[in-house]
Length: 36
Image (cartoon, rainbow, N blue to C red; front, top):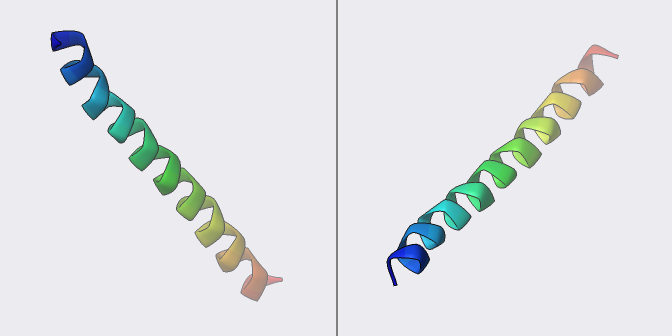
């Protein structure tokens, strides 16, 4: 049980980090478009 309780928050954190990275890349591509 303790392993599952520890794994769930870590899995959620990884999902959040993945979403942040995707959003950050989208923002970078957006910021590059007006410059070009």
